[in-house]
Amino acid sequence: MQKVCVIGAGSSGIAACQVLAERGIPYDCFELGSQVGGNWRYMNDNGRSSAYRSLHINTSRQMMEYACYPMRKDYPDYPGHAQIAQYFDAFVDHFALRDAIRFRTEVIDVSPTPIGQWTVTARHCDSRLETEQVYHAVLVANGHHWKPRWPHPHIEGAADFAGTQIHSHDYRVPEPFTGLRVLVVGIGNSACDIAVETSRVTQRTILSMRRGAHILPKYLFGTPTDHLTNSWLARAPLSLQDRGLQLLLRLSRGRLSDFGLPRPTHRVLAAHPTISDDLLSRLGHGDIAVKPAPQRLEADGVVFEDGSTEQIDAIIYGTGYDIAFPFLKPELIDVTENNLSLYRRVAAPDHPGLYFIGLVQPLGAIMPLAEAQAHWVADLLQHKCTLPTRSRMLDEIRSYRARQTRRYVASARHTIQVDARTYARELAKERRHGGKRARERTPC
Image 1 (spheres, rainbow, N blue to C red):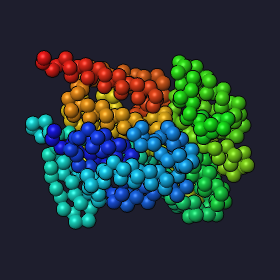
Image 2: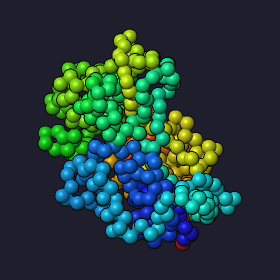
Image 3: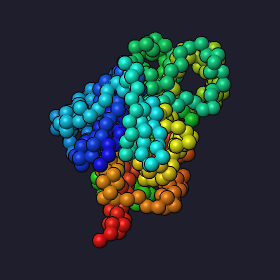
Image 4: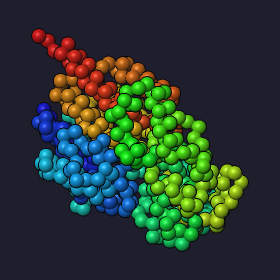
């Protein structure tokens, strides 16, 4: 078997490395930073981590851990970023993966060869020395939470605003905002965390959003909320799941409108969940005010869509991320509006040997899914499994997009959304069917 290239040593990249090593598939892994962990490595010297000092996971450790390497039992239900980084270090060392990772090395180009292989050009961040090597396949695991997505279209008057404007990607600690009037734009997990944290030191904190969102607590009746994915509720039809969860939320936290938040117009499971135990409390205490989306910025303030105005010193945009692959030419992969054409969210139909690991936004945890994706790709590399025809792959992609349109709120955030439990079953089914195809193509 010829060598495989893995790009990135974050949570998805090291999952791929572990599977390749277990299967005896030779590989090189390129990592821009000097340590593993990607987004979960606070102050990562690769410059792409969005972790802030107070960050904790939003899925419980039991749901987040790798199947092949559980987290320590003395970890809390929701560990902080430092504990997660330690877990990744232990994972890499337990499986002896570190020697195959080329740290401080940036992949600058990935191009197909005329004979169906891939030329990978990499550059060392310190020596600036460039190397070029041909690989049988490339597994892209560079993450999708590192390129900030700013409001689009741009807010009128943004260039005239005299205060500070940053993206949540660059937020680390609340102290720089002490005594200021701060506007946080967005209603996702990072926006809510940052609004809660800054509200403890600011003169005034405002949380602004285009639409309402369902706020899920980390615990329901003393149990991590995501443990419901292993309960009877997760095996019910989607409509019943949604109604059941809505009832549980109503019983446990009341109506969101009672806290000043706009009433969501979508079902609970029609958007990526916003998880916070603290937001409603801060709203209830009057420490955070709620406003609709900003319509126009002025030198010293903001005009909102309801016509109200506020004097603002700093704006933090929690407006999500764009998917990007700087090392892939646009004609290879189109990332317009984060809408990629990938079979089962992994394989590029027109580019054999190009795979994407962890490029999903799950209702659930990403790490076990990246692990499952890597096992499927390893099956393909070892010819234990084959892909269907191009037309069948394109049919699946169209079907996936149609399901997304029916189920989820229309936004760039939901183009790679999956339900973790359902998607894991899809991958397992794909491996079975792909294995059958491989056996049928093998002559007796």
